[in-house]
Amino acid sequence: MSDPLDRIAAALERLAPPPAKAPEFGMASAFVWQADPDGLMPVASVNRVDVNLLVGIDRSRDTLLQNTRQFASGMPANNALLWGARGMGKSSLVKAIHGAVQAEYPDLKIIEIQREDLPSINRLLSLLRHADARFILFCDDLSFSHDDAHYKSLKAVLDGGIEGRPDNVVLYATSNRRHLMPRDMIENERQTGINPSEAVEEKVSLSDRFGLWLGFHPCTQDEYLAMISGYCAAYGVEIDDETLRAEAIEWQATRGSRSGRVAWQYFTDLAGRQGVTLEG
Image 1 (spheres, one colour):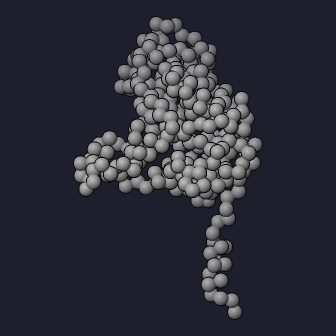
Image 2 (cartoon, helix red, strand yellow; image 1 turned 60 degrees about the horizontal axis):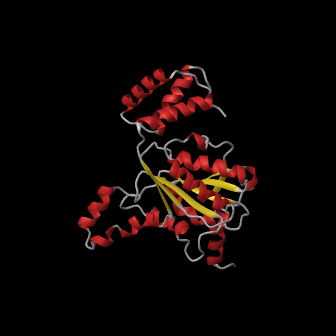
Image 3 (cartoon, helix red, strand yellow; image 1 turned 180 degrees about the horizontal axis):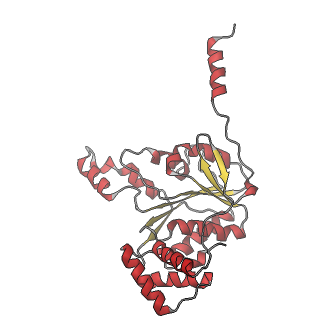
């Protein structure tokens, strides 16, 4: 008769899902990581705009483009945190730059990972560590609450643990918050903690582990109108300057904000009214 412990171990092995297999990375340039069960899902067509259509963020664009080219060519590169005003093109820039650099370096892949899947990131890194391709891990809209322990998993990418971060992996994250947690929460924990200086140090210092901090700020009206004009030129939408200005300003007024996202929403409405498709 077999040992009961052996039978239990065998049963657990049958219940446990097999380790995820690395996909054929040549099948796509972009993937989405999903956990439980682990797997990398190829993305046939990435939702992005041309990098030249992103107006008003020239410094951030040029810095991230240079960093990405360094990484794609096998040179040292930094993890990057893109933070700031909502709707100002943070995630659009990451996807656009990947598209631009991937045209030069076909082995550059982008993998999107959701914040709630961060605890599985070590398993993802084990799949990527020995692959021939190079990978941008992309986490959009990253932020943490005071009782959120997901940030600890992120250190596997930023610090690398005992194995170190794989040389073929870099992390790009976007957030509306510079320190990845609300300012009022930071101040509250500093005021109520037994050791105020230590209360939020671990979480606040997480953003310090990104080598690049790229700030995004609300655009001016001229930049807002230039964004729309650029879209019109790129997609062949014809409208006189006076009408565009009047409609675009009215559009932003009804939304109570002015950003790249609002500019694209107005342009989408304009293109639809003129019967212009936005595919390709």
